[in-house]
Length: 157
Image (cartoon, rainbow, N blue to C red):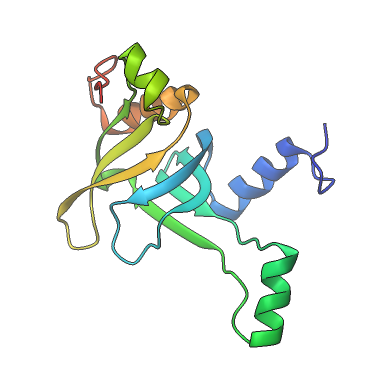
């Protein structure tokens, strides 16, 4: 099935794997919140676990109004942004899902993906991204990469 840009999703992922030189193990849409110096937030993109590590990949986009404003006032077009954490720097991952039904009803928030890792200075940090419940596969794949045995130990928020 082709997407609105005419590209088949399977073709997109084949091209993406060829570009990064790794196999994609799991992916999900997410919104980067915090945890990495130099990365703007909030930022929508793909959360990707590959054989080499974890990626957050933001694809540039702008509305016609933003484009018009940028061209008349000057300025740069949005740029592609990628955060990559090699598997050697990954420590653990968990999906934090609110389990209280009344909090879900009155204070609904999306699940949070928390990825513990070492940053470029080898200091432990936690990268946070909002995502969906089906992102549990991301956590499972990160745990497989790190050898972590914390499966099924997701926190309540």
